[in-house]
Length: 187
Ligand code: F6R
Ligand code: ZN
Image (cartoon, rainbow, N blue to C red; front, side, top):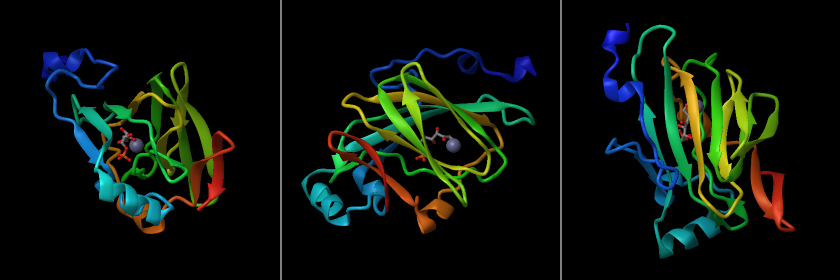
């Protein structure tokens, strides 16, 4: 098994400023890619009329797809708000629903919004904090600070990403700034 792993997948060096890993491709999500995610559609359209900023980027490291193997993604989510709602990732379920994930916060400060069919919960993600995302749970990352939030997400190689389920029902809760602090509100 070991001899099937490329040397460049065995150990990587990353930068906290850009979350780049060498010249590997990053999946980039700009404001225009997040239509429907933010609750205040008027504020979204107004912001998009002015600019289409990069909200987040992820570099995936996928050394092996074999049974029992792990993949991980290095993500950077920039600070900002649409209306009162903090910048966020699209969020997803794993296609293989039982697949759990561990998020390791590297720098910055934020939250993860976790939802299953019955419950919505917030978990702190940032420098010095980790989040365990159970299987069968939709998860979204939110930057509540004023510097980039950088994190690793480590997941089974067979997890897959299902964006459709969350795009059609959306998260039930939103995280907005209220009185200068993050507040979990109904959508
Ligand atoms: C992988 C994972 C993360 C996200 C990343 C971007 O399972 O949860 O690496 O892919 O935070 O968020 P999405 O994929 O929701 O655009
Ligand atoms: Zn995930």
